[in-house]
Picture (cartoon, rainbow, N blue to C red):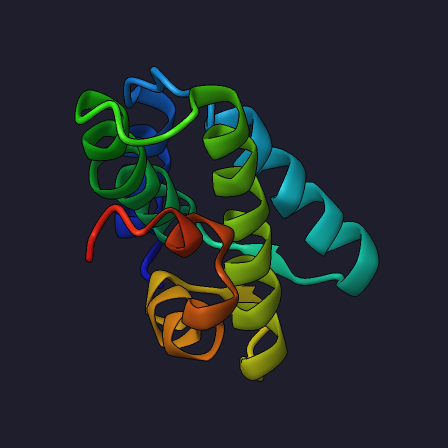
Length: 121
Protein backbone atom coordinates (compact mmCIF):
# COMPACT_ATOMS: atom_id res chain seq x y z
CA UNK A 1 0.00 0.00 0.00
CA UNK A 2 1.20 3.47 -0.88
CA UNK A 3 2.51 5.36 2.18
CA UNK A 4 0.24 8.35 1.57
CA UNK A 5 -2.86 6.16 1.42
CA UNK A 6 -1.68 4.16 4.43
CA UNK A 7 -1.27 7.39 6.42
CA UNK A 8 -4.77 8.48 5.44
CA UNK A 9 -6.23 5.19 6.67
CA UNK A 10 -4.30 5.59 9.91
CA UNK A 11 -5.80 9.07 10.37
CA UNK A 12 -9.30 7.85 9.52
CA UNK A 13 -9.00 5.03 12.03
CA UNK A 14 -7.48 7.22 14.74
CA UNK A 15 -10.05 10.01 14.29
CA UNK A 16 -13.11 7.77 14.00
CA UNK A 17 -15.77 7.80 16.64
CA UNK A 18 -15.73 4.58 18.61
CA UNK A 19 -18.97 4.46 20.61
CA UNK A 20 -18.67 0.70 21.13
CA UNK A 21 -15.02 0.81 22.23
CA UNK A 22 -13.79 -1.50 19.48
CA UNK A 23 -10.52 0.30 18.72
CA UNK A 24 -8.74 -0.95 21.85
CA UNK A 25 -9.86 -4.48 20.95
CA UNK A 26 -8.75 -4.19 17.32
CA UNK A 27 -5.44 -2.71 18.47
CA UNK A 28 -4.97 -5.60 20.91
CA UNK A 29 -5.64 -8.14 18.16
CA UNK A 30 -3.15 -6.35 15.89
CA UNK A 31 -0.57 -6.49 18.66
CA UNK A 32 -1.22 -10.19 19.28
CA UNK A 33 -0.96 -10.91 15.55
CA UNK A 34 2.38 -9.12 15.37
CA UNK A 35 3.69 -10.85 18.49
CA UNK A 36 2.60 -14.33 17.43
CA UNK A 37 3.32 -14.20 13.71
CA UNK A 38 5.37 -11.08 12.99
CA UNK A 39 2.58 -9.97 10.66
CA UNK A 40 0.71 -6.67 10.85
CA UNK A 41 -2.89 -5.60 10.49
CA UNK A 42 -2.87 -2.81 7.92
CA UNK A 43 -4.73 0.42 8.77
CA UNK A 44 -7.34 -0.24 6.07
CA UNK A 45 -8.14 -3.58 7.71
CA UNK A 46 -8.50 -2.02 11.15
CA UNK A 47 -10.70 0.74 9.76
CA UNK A 48 -12.86 -1.77 7.88
CA UNK A 49 -13.34 -3.86 11.01
CA UNK A 50 -14.21 -0.79 13.07
CA UNK A 51 -16.71 0.59 10.57
CA UNK A 52 -18.31 -2.70 9.66
CA UNK A 53 -18.80 -4.04 13.14
CA UNK A 54 -19.90 -0.66 14.53
CA UNK A 55 -22.29 0.49 11.81
CA UNK A 56 -23.47 -2.77 10.28
CA UNK A 57 -23.49 -5.18 13.20
CA UNK A 58 -23.72 -3.49 16.61
CA UNK A 59 -25.65 -0.29 15.95
CA UNK A 60 -28.66 -1.78 14.10
CA UNK A 61 -28.95 -4.72 16.49
CA UNK A 62 -28.85 -2.51 19.56
CA UNK A 63 -31.16 0.16 18.14
CA UNK A 64 -33.71 -2.53 17.33
CA UNK A 65 -33.31 -3.78 20.92
CA UNK A 66 -32.97 -7.32 19.61
CA UNK A 67 -29.85 -8.37 21.54
CA UNK A 68 -28.58 -8.49 25.13
CA UNK A 69 -26.05 -5.66 24.97
CA UNK A 70 -23.22 -6.99 27.14
CA UNK A 71 -23.23 -10.53 25.73
CA UNK A 72 -23.65 -9.28 22.16
CA UNK A 73 -20.69 -6.92 22.41
CA UNK A 74 -18.51 -9.73 23.75
CA UNK A 75 -19.63 -11.91 20.85
CA UNK A 76 -18.72 -9.08 18.46
CA UNK A 77 -15.23 -9.03 19.92
CA UNK A 78 -14.95 -12.79 19.48
CA UNK A 79 -16.13 -12.47 15.88
CA UNK A 80 -13.56 -9.78 15.13
CA UNK A 81 -10.86 -12.10 16.49
CA UNK A 82 -12.20 -14.94 14.34
CA UNK A 83 -12.15 -12.79 11.20
CA UNK A 84 -8.62 -11.50 11.85
CA UNK A 85 -7.31 -15.00 12.54
CA UNK A 86 -8.89 -16.34 9.35
CA UNK A 87 -7.58 -13.41 7.29
CA UNK A 88 -4.10 -14.17 8.61
CA UNK A 89 -4.51 -17.88 7.90
CA UNK A 90 -5.54 -17.45 4.27
CA UNK A 91 -3.09 -14.66 3.46
CA UNK A 92 0.45 -15.14 2.23
CA UNK A 93 1.29 -11.50 2.92
CA UNK A 94 3.08 -10.02 5.92
CA UNK A 95 0.41 -7.32 6.14
CA UNK A 96 -3.26 -8.24 6.52
CA UNK A 97 -5.31 -5.92 4.33
CA UNK A 98 -8.97 -4.93 4.27
CA UNK A 99 -9.33 -7.07 1.15
CA UNK A 100 -8.07 -10.10 3.05
CA UNK A 101 -10.50 -9.37 5.88
CA UNK A 102 -13.35 -9.41 3.36
CA UNK A 103 -12.02 -12.63 1.82
CA UNK A 104 -12.02 -14.24 5.27
CA UNK A 105 -15.73 -13.63 5.92
CA UNK A 106 -17.23 -16.51 3.90
CA UNK A 107 -14.98 -19.01 5.69
CA UNK A 108 -16.06 -17.89 9.16
CA UNK A 109 -19.62 -16.68 8.57
CA UNK A 110 -21.30 -19.77 10.04
CA UNK A 111 -18.93 -19.71 13.04
CA UNK A 112 -19.61 -16.08 13.96
CA UNK A 113 -21.38 -15.84 17.30
CA UNK A 114 -23.32 -12.73 16.30
CA UNK A 115 -25.11 -14.73 13.61
CA UNK A 116 -26.78 -16.84 16.33
CA UNK A 117 -28.91 -13.84 17.34
CA UNK A 118 -30.77 -14.05 14.00
CA UNK A 119 -30.99 -10.28 13.79
CA UNK A 120 -30.57 -10.22 10.03
CA UNK A 121 -32.89 -13.10 9.12
